[in-house]
View (cartoon, rainbow, N blue to C red):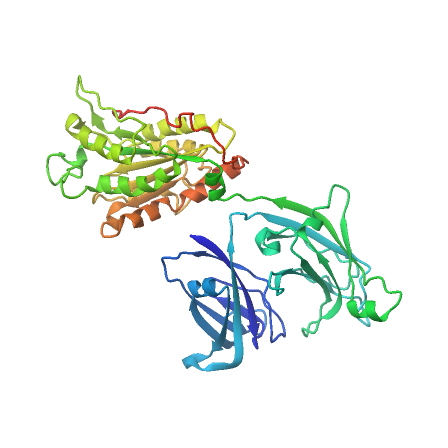
Length: 515
């Protein structure tokens, strides 16, 4: 997916614009509002994402949608249409498809790249012109980004400081994409106004800046600009300015994305753990979940292949670790699945080991989680973003060591590890949802919460009729966020793209009986 941000403008619309996902701020007494609110949306090329925008003239301070509000018009479109056009202008329609006069809505879209850092800015001003007769000005500041086509895009509008010629505005945060499109030399147009409750704000002055200029601020020093009214400058010989605007503080925050870490050389080490308990049924019986059908793979193989084929793209040698649990290994038999095997090798190793082991039990998965967490902990001691682990657990029932499993997950949440659990078969997996943490924070038996939400549980039966890609998309959806959360918590930046591929990434693991 890609993320796009949308900016909105209106024509002949008053005070409010919004849609079911979110709403903008209120613009008072203005028939041509330009809204500062920016909406970030996930964009999927393969999906039709329908949107509806509705514009209202609101009365009072009550929430949008009351009977007193006037519906000024709406429009329906798809996110794909907005993305394709970058700037979409459409007429507003009233009920039954009637045009709302000449009213239009304009939506701008731009892609948010991997450079999604943000900056926190603190502005103040001194000796601004007084525009009011019986009191002092009520100043507010607007910052516009000047685009490549010379159009202006509102980036931020500060709050109004009442009756003050030396205002100190509240610090605000803005992404570098929104501020300057990650171009430090891009011009920013900054306007200072004297607020008017009727919407007819008095112009105090303006100045131009760049993000590079702003970064000249250092400890004890501030960046200042003359706030100039061009009309006064042209008419008054001794005119200097209408006050000065000061950048008193700048804090730059770099927020790294999943792709930053992957493109920086982070390797995703994939491990699969397969349930070999007796509840799966005798593999020689066609009713068994482990039955090897010569014409189509069983559910274990379908899940393994669907997830594994995606994960292998993020590991340079495309080789995995494979473990088994719940099996009894007969005397003089050694079942070993090497760590350095490709996805097809895992499939073959799984098929070859079934006749050599006795399905037994119980369904204890905490030893598996502890084992991989220990491996990940070794990588966690490396102070770079070089290795992250994904553990895929395939099981046919609810785990029998739930308390130990919860404890193991809490411990594992401190390591570079994500856990995916796929429930195979028709068992009641209700209790397994506890491990997912979507309904609340998972805690150990002693009450300690997980540091990060690292578990995703999915019943395979929900995807029986879907494509393998649908299962993979579901179970892997949270992994990018989990990777970023781990390294962000550790304050670890992405590596440079150069890495030593001669260093072994995996340590040998073998199928083990239940501990």
